[in-house]
Length: 272
Length: 204
Image 1 (cartoon, rainbow over the protein chains, first blue to last red):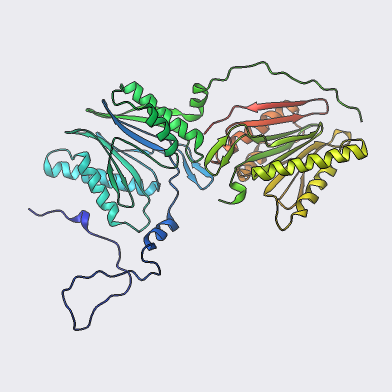
Image 2: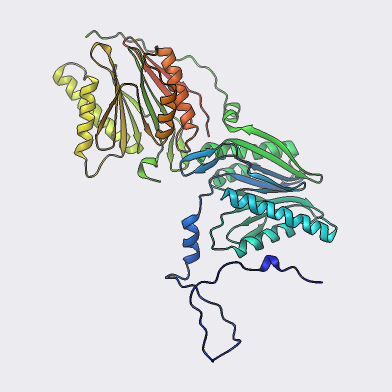
């Protein structure tokens, strides 16, 4: 049986000096150091140069009935809103979802690539891939592109044989397993609402309302989040989209305007 | 982001038939975080002159306080209100005094001058006056605002129609800007009355 090591192959180009010793030591393992001024920071500096700010709010949490995933739909370029209708929850396959934060092209491409790899796994092994396995595939791919400027901050949420699964994967190569995550510039605001309202024993409706509220509060406070708050639920039968509410209207639903009598000052117009 | 985009703002002033409208957004933010949704950017200098200040919030407030002081002195000495043209020159002079350490504001001045003829003008942060016959805009959403006003403006509009046009132009432009919006504040000024209205906008 041949092991598939394609995920481990590094495509990062070798930079810098080769330290070959002529006719000297052979076979001694070495790695080439990149030819930069500051070895410790060069990767981070390269990323910062091309990094688009992760202006978004996405969140996901595990509860008794599965996983709840929610996101806003705004794309911003600096101060300009380029779109209010971006799909940030990506359907990898009928039982797994990924969220988008960071570079839109990066997230869309690599999630689709992950979907392909998951399907190939299904065909080769006659069983569905686990959420653990899928997130590991993605994390390994992103790690091999580390330092090249990919910007991906994603959560992989799904339901497999062991029940609900949620992983956070990012383009720095990090991969975390957890119960509650929020990613993006609006995440502090979403965490505030999510953490204070969370119970494991919520019903699907309560969890959906909590997720929607958290996204709504983030869109209110964060300038780079807005548009439509989408909420998805991943259960044993797969994912299902529960709601997609325009945040502009949600504000007036949560804060209805009561018409009040306004005192008007009548002033005489002064003559010339 | 530049210092002018630190707090976020949007301002329009538009001329109608014997009237004018001046409108602003209501957001005060610190870069991307929204702090307040009821920030006042348009100030009344006297019944027929209104001043809107976009840009850095603290400079806008300080500049307004200085201008009110100067106008009150003028009122005591001349025993009358300042004409909008004169007020614009005062603002321009005050801004140029700080040529090498400027106020990070872009003022928009709107008023009714002699025979109640509407007057609007804007300036950059060091006092270069730009007079216009139709509309002036300022703030982080200024490019969107220019486009919206250019498309929707018609000369000699009545106050009610002017209010509609200004409101639509403001709301559609701030909906494309991360740093301004969260409601709107519109003043429509005619020789006999001032109508102040708050707009219901997208709060995201």
